[in-house]
Image (cartoon, rainbow, N blue to C red):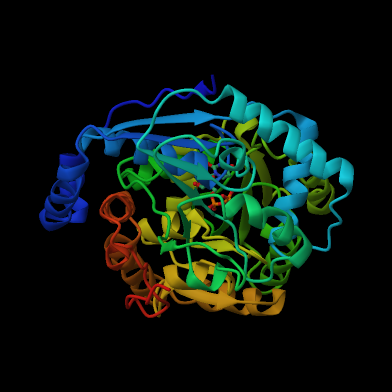
Length: 430
Ligand code: UDP
């Protein structure tokens, strides 16, 4: 039996304040034909990273909408997760060689997960590559099986994708955040484009008194009266923490009072994290205006909320990014973002919200521009918040899942969700 994750209840009605009554009514209408449907989400970890952030809310709201939803995790070990981290890196474009031993580790573990799989479901949603091969090992299992990819596949390493492809093609449908991520040789009838979402009512994103936010960051060593730059990310080279420090140092030459906080959590499925954390600490050196903090220092969701609200600018200088929830989290709080022009980040900013950058120099220039112009920060923040409200709240994500379930149930591809494009218009689905 795969381990079940406890999901505290949520009430859909409470989301009307932000999402609007129409959005809730649409969800109720889409949920009606799915009443009682048994839904299972499976992923690798209950803590750390974007997927573990999304699933509690999505599962709880599906339940409140009348579906019988569950969330379970796979029992991977370090050897398995170092293979899946290599898979992840390869899918994001790194030069990795998948040796025979690694392929076997992946296969054996997924066969083991498939053996542990119990129960009958109407819809099984398998998240990301780690458990992706379960379906291939359970071809007779009933229900519709959906693979949900959260990774930036724009420059996927062909060998690594070639290894994963047969597992993905065993599904009835796949969900990608962007149409750009779909590999040209993927042979699958139904492909939906559904961007992820943030929960506006969670401790991470709920309204917080600005004074309380300042009090919280003060206790971690931030001076709330001086400007703060922040990046919140797992310790991962794709998040470019070294580039963020370089940029902060360049900004500090112009604005000496600036501070930087790098906040990162350790995910159980990311064995590389500790090494990168130590590298970042070493690179940060002795600078009392540069804080490197983790969940192990007591930085949980509420503290992340406080840090995001107390920042002048939130940075997300990713080099690849499936979506980057931290961008929407900051924008939702009205904080402008300086972020990598990669993956799922541009659709979050649209033509408001902040600045897209590629190089350290561009990040520096954008931070300086925003730090020097409170009016600009305010207007970009406001625009970003409204964009997140319209496109990136949990209710929109839930609606898209329900639309996909209905489409699969009806066998009607015209109903498959098609996401939003860079300019906010609907994309065609292929
Ligand atoms: N996060 C956190 N504490 C940390 C680092 C990250 O709570 O120290 C959260 C962050 O707020 C976001 C999620 O982890 O909700 C990371 O999701 P994102 O999509 O940005 O990146 P991923 O880790 O999935 O690549």
